[in-house]
Length: 202
Image 1 (cartoon, rainbow, N blue to C red):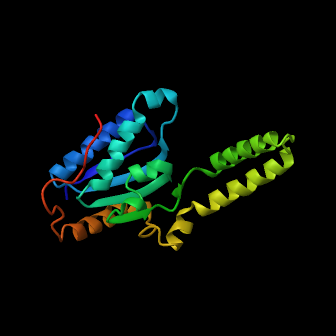
Image 2 (cartoon, rainbow, N blue to C red):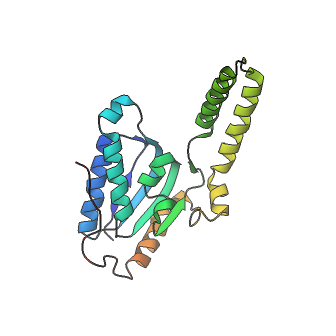
């Protein structure tokens, strides 16, 4: 079966998101199913990247994913974090199938990053109350937070809650995708011509 494949290995930049949005639209025009291979930490952040259009191009990509009418399949092969999970057709965008590799992780952010953010919040809260932050208490909360995030972002935790369609052996990825594509090709997946994308910001 002909397919369009979107893959990444790290953070999404503005030009990547812009290219992906156009690619998704082209695949919809040619009625070509899409396969997303997740290994993403999220969208690039920072003033420089916001000025460069990351919000505009990122939202264009998410718009294209959300309104795509061809079959979409997601395979989480590494991490899938934050808004990057949505951009790569995570569970929230109802792909036809979503599979995970045993080593994969899905979360709002990584455990270490979450623990770091929480430490900053606690330190600032203590200073606002006129207190000196307690390093031992903060360290304890950091360890507990990181452990919780790490435990609850594993493929096994997610699949036990039916957040995906199963954990697959990486060696079986091609076979599992071909079965999914075969299932998808049993119906006409473009109902009325062009997808209802709405308005893209240029």
